[in-house]
Length: 314
Length: 259
Image (cartoon, rainbow over all chains, first blue to last red; front, side, top):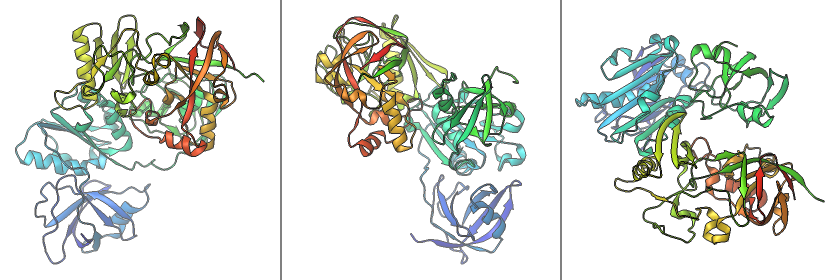
């Protein structure tokens, strides 16, 4: 199917950074149908092609496509162009809907959304609940209430909305500890969340785990840096292709670890100098100030000083 | 000129395809392998293994990393004294099964049927045969069944530097990991005897690698096309060698290797 030229019929700011765009056919025709989990590829005025999930549940004979775009000023420009260059009545070139994240039948569901990853899951949850279904559980993980699109929709008995700024990262294990073949898990969010869910469901049937990962802000190349091991002052080069944990070990520094996927926190080290780019999915806000999970996180500065972590402030 | 190195690590893999268990020392006797190495396996229910099978079978008859990478996402440990198999996911206990009891074996089989996502009513057979191991080399005969596998860290580093890619030596699931030798000198030793930490061994064959090495040992994801990397780099698919044990002795971490 060829691309569509659609008109922006309305915009709403759902949060300070998330804007809702409503796209319609300029002549008022119905649009190609879609199911929850589908996305469209939007060509931005600046020329980027970006995928956005359709957030509304009923796509049988849609009159409009609704997408929600988080403005990522540290990204590659696509979301910024949509926020800054697109006003009501602008025309956009849009692909027909494609669904690589389809909602499959299941007795029950567990949806895990991280931030703007709510967009495809909102369509799924609303579709299922609109059918009167129960057993449609949602874990919605965001930084703060202010940064939570659709917050008011998810205050039911099967919803858990968790803000990491207030309470640190949510421990997902209680929700995933007991594998249940009658539950399908759908997870959409940044790479660390998706990795965490994959690691924590290693004992589930893989056919019950559905994930969609969007590029995290740090998805660029890893840069080399130098780690200084505080106890003896040795300098360890960490090349781009090695983790901090691996580089330290190769130099003979013993660091305990377990999951090596940024999930368990066993390899946490104290940070005594330098800046960290946190890539793990286990640290609380407080822990991020003073420590680093060596298996996945890296230095943002050219040099980082680390030492054993004793469980509290260094 | 003789090459001198040392034994950096020793591993036993009590269940084929499941986690490595480090050892500090191991007692060896002529013609035998490491005690408890690959003495259990998860056999395919529709394949060649039946309880009582005494001949070596190719790895395709078993669930293992070459085909079932998700097994590597589970951190397992078999207590070889009690036959209790435990499994952890990201540090959390998810299985505690006494394989010496029928109930424990059923628990383990149910657990792995789910990890392997087998259809309803299908489960792996928990294979164990007195005096036998389910090593890959067992398909070549009962002598090869007891070979030890060795990986030379210098060769792995050579691969890393030629490809610019980090290669965790654990991907090769060797029994014996040595360092201090020249890269690829282990291949030159084929057909010769040498001293491995006080135990006389013969280097019998280079190890041809399979897609099991493509699996990240900790994460249960196939993330590195290691077989094709080796092939592109060297024009072969070899990494490491097999050893036949010729004399009795105790092999320890740190032991000297003279090739």
